[in-house]
Image 1 (cartoon, one colour):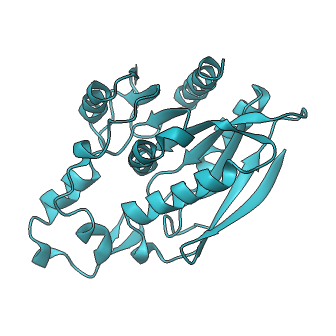
Image 2: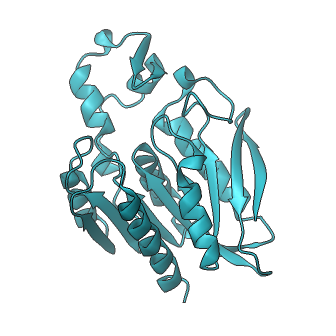
Length: 248
């Protein structure tokens, strides 16, 4: 079962799909946050798998997070922190759904959505039962600050991976020490990362797992930044098992 949800906040609208198991009940939920220039549909197979395991899922588009986003806002207005605002609004709204157990809400973030989920979990710990990160792009601030070491070097727009980013994206992360803002979430964390990831080195996930008090790192042999079908299936299974273990 899949239903559309639209969540308004900060003068913008988040579009997403809420997935439910077929049976009646109140369910734990996993909120999926997509990566750069992705969409909620990127995790549709994960969501459908979870519903077969008795777990609900919410897959949404970040505002300005993609050229194919169904949420509002231009891509040139998006920053890591507008995405964090989106996710905070999503958490608040989904917890109020009658079919959702507000005490069993899990965050799942892939790539840039992983960074956003990690930042959000640290600030919303009381509302979030567990955190799942899929090759989280904890390198974003490092990468762009290396490319634009001086603020005067930042252009008005950058065309990156078929999507335009505005100056505010880069200005918002100038001097941002990512590992000073993540790793404090005290509940259970599952991190999944491929050992052949050429976009986000696995060392970033290893480092954040050293910071979290209760983290487990699953390294996927031979997988890159974007898993194969077999890798995605294993990741979905590990996600379901993590939710089940943390809702007993």
